[in-house]
Length: 185
Image (cartoon, rainbow, N blue to C red; front, top):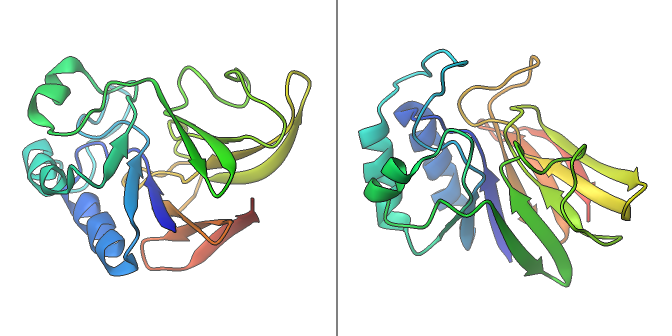
């Protein structure tokens, strides 16, 4: 099973288009969006080709393939125009026997963990900083923390990236297909 993870589109039609081209070419079975889909937020500059209406038109036809969680920039108004649920603060997935806790990252993150058990996987966006690491925690033992970075507004000198889970390996890739980081789960 192949699953694509992406975060922080922030209304960029340009980067959403590139992301969806990659998604379709990859033949992934699902696209997990980790929040901040339409709005750029007051702390960010407008991303390239900021056009939330075009992003809506690109994503809605894929409504049966998308799992999404709410980002700090996502609102009830956004839900009114998107045809797939986006207002859940988190999603739980069991993939190949591993539990994934998917969230945006503004509430739950490595420094503020949700209820987890050793071996669980926390996947989030929000920081726009890519990450794929095993982390030892006091509260729940060793977990994996994944962040695919940002599709449209990367920070910290990172490129525009997304994540792909395939055969038990989480890869973070640039939009040009270069593997930036990998972690066996």
